[in-house]
Image 1 (cartoon, rainbow, N blue to C red):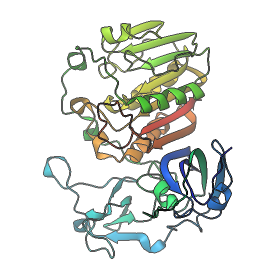
Image 2: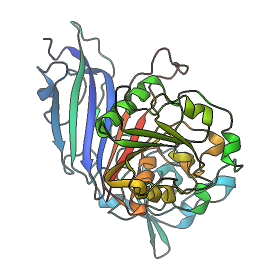
Image 3: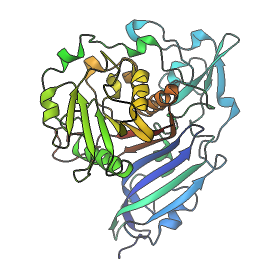
Image 4: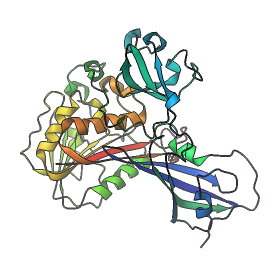
Length: 402
């Protein structure tokens, strides 16, 4: 079996696992052309990888003290309201909301912060008329388990140089940590304006034409299917909420019942896994037409961003779930613009996971909350957006009914 040496290039999937007060988190990054000779790894991770073969893994624990961007009290800043220059919809001044993230470049007169600064800062609230922002990395106070899974090894005889990659920075950059509450306090996602849509006509009119297309590329579709197959057990009664002509479950999964609820009859009748279909508009009536405790699992796939009253739907999902039943919500970074709630495009990808986690928590009916993200996989060469380098990212949030 070929093993990793200092001259190897490898495909490695990094998995970052950490725990917040309310949820368990796993964030994965697929990395091609990793160099063990040139690149940077935290702690002993590089030496652990040497000698491993494909399919094997190594893990390193990163404490808050050893994190590359440790917490600094000096990065909690207080500014006058006039120093926050965010502009919201319609050109009106943006009002920061408790627990939300904003680009640091929106702050003026803060040492080391410039208008081009895109790193996130978190709004912590008001203090005697001043706005309080946290400029620390959102993972600066967390203990992190970083696992490196060896997916493919390429042995090369000559090292040709090139860019040096810091893999801890790559894995923790651009999002991880933003999905958790700050100090266990609720994040304010719930301005009424955030749930308006640019097209407020009846949804049945918008969806009356069938759209027999995939909303993710094939690699992302496979990721969703594998995740569902890992979490949903065979023999369950499953409701596919806001479903269509595919339910994203593994082809060989046996369910005692798969009910698909959606808006377009032609799409639903094309779903070969469905045992029964239901036409229902959740934005017109969030009450689900099912008896209490009638399902073991509820799926909501690439659709959460269209719900005008998602908390009502989450509470209904809890009502129809049996005790310990599962609610799984997956999404990516693509949507129908006219029907998406206005809040959704304002959020960072990882902050959207925070929003969905907040829906679970605000509904008051779920426990054992978890989320998963996967980024960086190569886009399929036959995809219609093959000019893009990476596959659609996948985000999944799930919990169990109390």
